[in-house]
Length: 304
Image 1 (cartoon, helix red, strand yellow):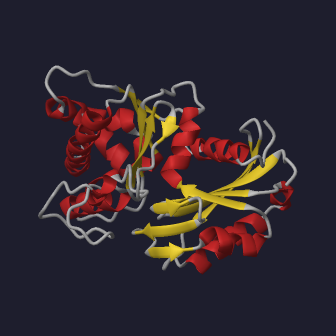
Image 2 (cartoon, one colour):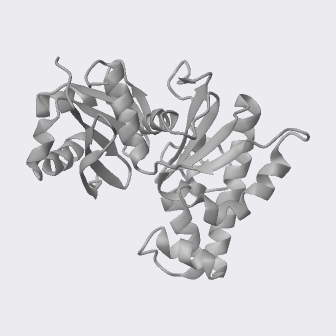
Image 3 (cartoon, helix red, strand yellow):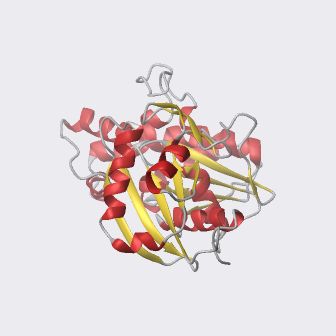
């Protein structure tokens, strides 16, 4: 196919679906968002994306679509093998999307797409971890400048490490996974159980509560810090990264809650080892768009 100046980047999450018309230089020309449908069947998700793409004629200028999806994604086959938050198993999403929009489609795990974007930033390192905390929790792994996926596509599924054997049931079927504590739903649940209030403005309600010393907000962030410190200390021991980038809807607020995380992380690390540099994502949501550009260029679908 001929090179194009534009691609569409699509970010499918457990809470929101986002679409971006992206230019070669990384500029976002158009950006739209809608809630992930419930239940989030593949057909309903595709219909939400279709409505977003139809909302602005400029999306038609793109010659290809790059889609980020959570879970175990077989990018070569275009299949979402398993997604706990969306309840998808062996969904041929690339084929379904290509049939819908009659344009080439590539899919990739959303956190790996985010990590590809971070690799293009000034904060990148040849050996780093990219922890994305949103509805779920996952980690992109960069070893010697290359994304590491593992033998069965599960490398980086940090959110499904067990941190509380007496915890709540996770969407994956296990009890007490990290994302039941650190993800959006887990943090909201912890705050509501303590305060008796419904979280109506997440995450601002908990960030403001933290800054004001609200006991329940502090307790929720402390619990997040404890679980994440335990899980990340194991990842640091295994991969010895130079840097750890925090991204996602909660990760970007890392400067606000790091005080509940750093001391515990230091206590869990192997004595005498150096803590890697830990930074919030400088790209925010745009990390996914830079990752999409990188993937499109690798496929020869976009101008360099």
